[in-house]
Amino acid sequence: MVDLNTLIVTGGAGFIGSALVRHLIENTDQRVVVLDKLTYAGNLESLAPVLKSARLIFQKGDIADRELVSQLLRTYRPRGVFNLAAESHVDRSIDGPSEFIQTNIVGTFNLLECCLEYWASIGKDERFRFQHISTDEVFGSLGASGAFSEDSRYEPNSPYSASKASSDHLVRAWNHTYSLPVLLTNCSNNYGPYHYPEKLIPLVIRNALAGKPLPVYGDGLQVRDWLYVDDHVRALVRIFEAGVPGDTYNVGGDCERTNIAVVRTICDVLQDLAPRTQPYADLITHVPDRPGHDRRYAINCSKLKTRLGWTQTETFETGIRKTIQWYLANQDWVRAVLENKYDGQRLGGGR
Ligand code: NAD
Ligand code: DAU
Image 1 (tube, rainbow, N blue to C red):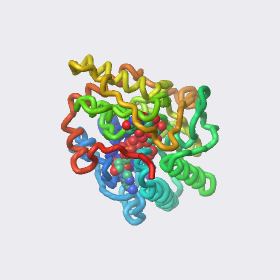
Image 2 (spheres, protein in one colour):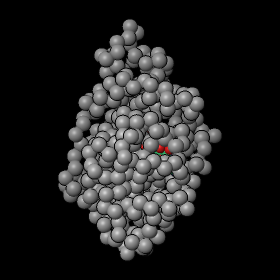
Image 3 (cartoon, rainbow, N blue to C red):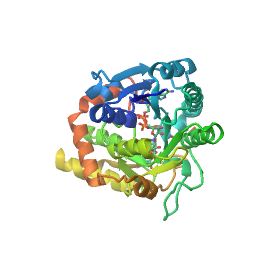
């Protein structure tokens, strides 16, 4: 039988994973076992607010390690596994795709195999769930109108999105063929506290505060659909509790913005919170575009809203202000996660 009070979160020291773990420890009575390899993107500092909790168990390790994953499942008998472990940065996938294939595809395959074996060993307990966290990027790029639905065709364009698409297909197949109770979620761009400062929003905040150029790829008119990370976390928990096994759910912000508009908004909020004589916006610098850059993403998340009653709580204006305030107050976290790991050089220039 499963232990109804225990969950495993892979990638729980990353941006979204740590937000999920902090939420579970702070707002529920669940015991949470975190499995994380602590790559450059994984940092125990992101779990600092809950690290002392007796309900948090941290295991450093690789989701592709069969022995380790099986042992964790046997030992803790979780009622669910949230899979957020991944290589997540598109630019890095352009420079070096190999880790993306290994973690996102081989690692997910290993988790599925271990979970299937574990699920059989607990008599196929119907309360068990394997929840795979994926991205809207699997659907490719949109034209000027329309939005991705759960029925959109998979058309991944980058090594990153192709590896995520592959993992989604494996998850679907393990449900269809072996009846493993899986849930699949495809989400748009997240932002918020503890976001590794190589991604657009935290990079721009960091560079602006240092008086460095704010790099905007190409014309900056690419569109992303932004969701505050804690709203994503609430969606993940709601889907875990009430989603139909085998189903997929899109999660989005209903918040399309061009990249240049996002950068200008950050400059405006910074000007208000940390005034600078020469306006931050003067630092905006257009640089060569990302190879194969997807033009526009937008998510239709009406299935999640109507069937499971979830909705966003933050607007972009409230969310970005909270985010910037957090970075201003947590420069130590930024310094700690960057130490020896990333010197701010341009990534994703192509090979
Ligand atoms: P992140 O890069 O911040 O964190 C990834 C975490 O996974 C890190 O803690 C890292 O140490 C860990 N990890 C990497 N390889 C591992 C391995 N082999 N074994 C164990 N742990 C490993 O990523 P994120 O932004 O938090 O994204 C989490 C998930 O959500 C990813 O699957 C990503 O594709 C998906 N997603 C992200 C966004 C977004 O905007 N950030 C949007 C939609 C979906
Ligand atoms: O859509 C969901 C995806 O969002 C997730 O699956 C990924 O894990 C996550 O990293 C994110 O991918 P993006 O490529 O959209 O995020 P990034 O922050 O890297 O870039 C956002 C946009 O800003 C994108 O159009 C590229 C652009 N950009 C990015 C950087 C780092 C710039 O213009 N300048 C930059 O320096």
